Image: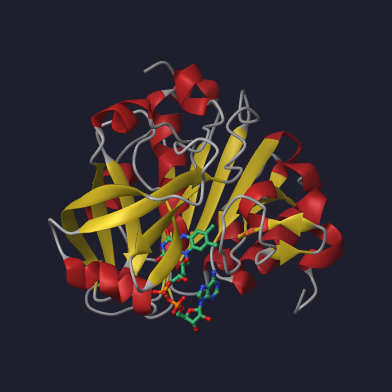
Length: 291
Ligand SMILES: Cc1cc2nc3c(=O)[nH]c(=O)nc-3n(C[C@H](O)[C@H](O)[C@H](O)COP(=O)(O)OP(=O)(O)OC[C@H]3O[C@@H](n4cnc5c(N)ncnc54)[C@H](O)[C@@H]3O)c2cc1C
Ligand code: FES
């Protein structure tokens, strides 16, 4: 698949009837940590599977009949059409039901939905990715894409924060990236357990170690609400323009395509206008506790 196809905005696979899930089989489940698992899914319809395209930062609605649906980011390599991965933290009924189904189980899938990361804006720039906890999942496709097409960007930096070394997602892959000269990786943990000898503290503390060319950087942030807020403000204070600081937001989702109003965020719908927003678009509502 060419880079251009991979970066194109993907359309929902179910055409007009985007409420209608299509069946997908759980091929395998990899444990990332005690409550987070990566599910490999396969669409049962070969023709849909062949046409299925998505962009980094987009999400699917995963459906369990009689239980409900959950919005889950796609976290695989957008240029590997054979693999459709979702990393899921067990939170409530849908996510625990998915885990109980196990490999071979059939789930419903709608998507891909939403506006993803600004892959067109990275050209010739430094790209700084900031992830906290499960927030690394929607950023992983960005890393894959940019490592495939490393010539597109100047510097590629990943700052990742996890509660403890044991809770780090994609530990083996992060080790590989750490040794890869094409990407600068800094990982910090809140609690240093075992033989951890790296930085300790919240991920935003890593920003101080970063020599930032603020006039020519694109920043992408995904994590808990507090991390999103603090990181965005720090980059703005370092003079990164507000339209180049991107944040992925979470809201409770229902339809996923701008019909039901569940994910309203000021005048925006997070499912359709986001989940990825440039700070400049949400500045007036971002700082408020409840919107
Ligand atoms: C765009 C988007 C992408 C997401 N990507 C992922 C992902 O890649 N992996 C993943 O594990 N989760 C992801 N989530 C979060 C996931 O959708 C929720 O955790 C989901 O609702 C869990 O469903 P459940 O039925 O198991 O739990 P529920 O019973 O729905 O929820 C359990 C608890 O989590 C709270 N909760 C539910 N949804 C949210 C939310 N969106 N924000 C804050 N609190 C919430 C509920 O209030 C409740 O307290 C994403 C959410 C969005 C909006
Ligand atoms: S989830 Fe229905 S409008 Fe966003």
